[in-house]
Length: 169
Image 1 (cartoon, one colour):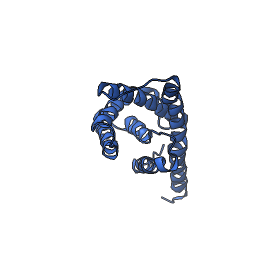
Image 2: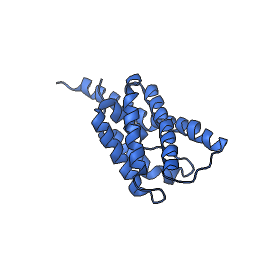
Image 3: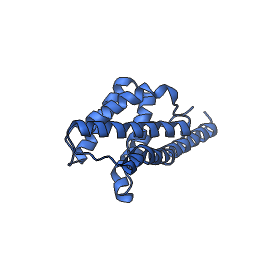
Image 4: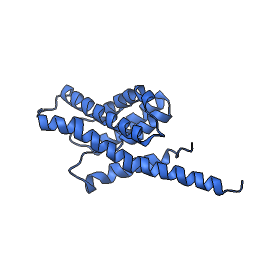
């Protein structure tokens, strides 16, 4: 099967990271989770850790309220966890990839809350906040991954196949 080059999901992830807060300010997406999922499915463990660290640094540089390095640590641990559970998911199946992104998003919430409490940030737990953090946000991230990542990648695959079939060589 023809897989899209990593430039396509990287571009989609960066666009979502930059513009999602402006378009949907009330929705808090883990915009880089689908790209991390694709990296974990395609690359080695060390590459996944480096990409996770790079994503965390990008978010650390754009965030001024939380301690520097919190997101780097979160995304590096998230990459390690995501790589360990990758054997049950496939990039070729859009629903499984979306489910994988939802699980990564849920893990991100757990890691972020635990690391924030470890670094001394004041946390208040409410049922509505936990419900939103551990159920609604992963569902929205899964839907986002399906429509923003899986559909363009399937379109690329179809386009590439048709182009190869029409080629005389």
